[in-house]
Length: 248
Image (tube, rainbow, N blue to C red; front, side, top):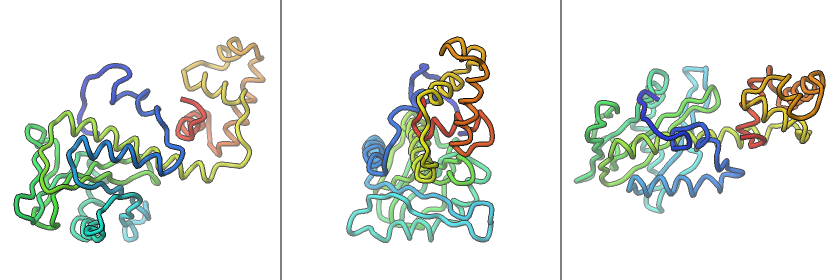
């Protein structure tokens, strides 16, 4: 995402972490966002996805999830109107977080020592200060997880951790979209077992020995799973099976 940090194998920056607690519905994503909001001491959150990817003149930000208060229902539109073009351009060239100061008195956002690894937007464009975490997952998975407040004092650890969690939120949304379009025919237990072992780095011969099957049978299961997941190859099938929660 443009910066790195060391951590344990199962810490917030690890693949294992991102695979845990996969959301089964949008209602499962709200608690994650609320926890992130609390960690950042923010007032509200909003998740924006980019529609019309690949069509420069038709790209736009669409608010997917938010918890704007009754008096802030126009906040999403204000954010898009004030910074929309900048957000769309920024995600094409950088994944550094964006921060800005609001026009209200004492409305500011400060990233402290992490400031060189953020991009500061023009001040006083919207009433509230905030931070936007860009996430780029492909043509259908790009967008921002944003948090706004009257004032925000952000530590480097908080920024990195919440950026990682923002990636998880966007992965959850993408997985939910894919789950709705997945073929009605579900994967069998054998197909799931073969995909899991393949995802763990096992080759067909090793999978066959582990499951007591022939190599031909293993390849047949992996092939049928790839077709069911509407994937072009085994690697894509494994990635999609992870997003859909079939394997971890």
